[in-house]
Image (cartoon, rainbow, N blue to C red; front, top):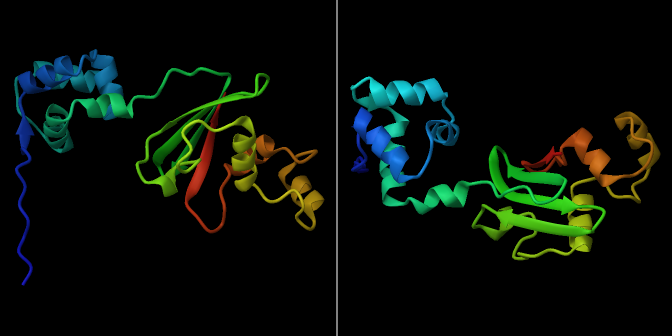
Amino acid sequence: MNKKKDFVTPKQITSDGVKELRTRLGMTQREFADFLRVSKPTIERWESQGKDISGPVAVLSQIAMLHPEMVEELALPEKRFPLRLVYRYKETVCTVIDVDEMGREVKIRNYARNLLYRAFGAVENPTYEEYEEFLESRCFPRTRDKMKIMLQQLDIPFYDPILIIQKTQGRMAEDDFWIEIVR
């Protein structure tokens, strides 16, 4: 017989608790709202209404209090180069890739611990050539039969992995990984 699991997570958090958590994490109301994916007025209301708040924020508050380093681990790095690609598995960010195409430089930040979910696997400092290989791995091969027809269907004049990924998000039929391009 399966025994029901119970958890020590809180059912609610007080208004003061929300403000204390935000302050402890060193965030403004706007930053905290962005972190929780709620509006700033929601944070303002939670902090000022003097009532207990229930729902996922109560559980997140305990996790964040026990593991404040999580906030830094989830923070996006400052954009270093003109091109940013966000490699995702479904909606989860796995790797952020900043690229200077002119200087042929690549900087990454992995968010996935599992190497299979990282854009470059175990490689922490990919070369520009490894970046190019990665891009092509998310496109149809250059040598594919009837490539010109595929390029026409995508309204792309020539084989360019970035243009292809802009149109297809680097989605492949057999997986749930995709790429968001941020300029």
